[in-house]
Image: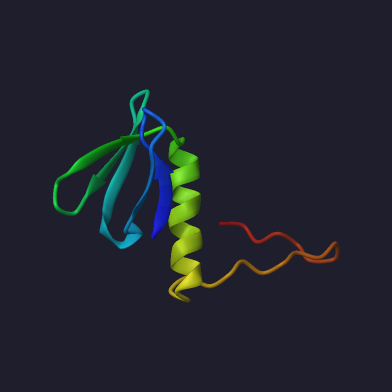
Length: 76
């Protein structure tokens, strides 16, 4: 579950497992698997970060490894 804010300032929680996609146009639209669309104040990056953090908290995504000064950054 992630906490987001409606445009009128009302905070609420949505099930991040039900997010189909997120768009910014210029407001942020969250489309759920049911087809319902929700407009929120948070940026697309904030919504994605919260959804990723939620998935990590469920241990479905591994936590990023910490980089040390002597480790090269791997190319994508």
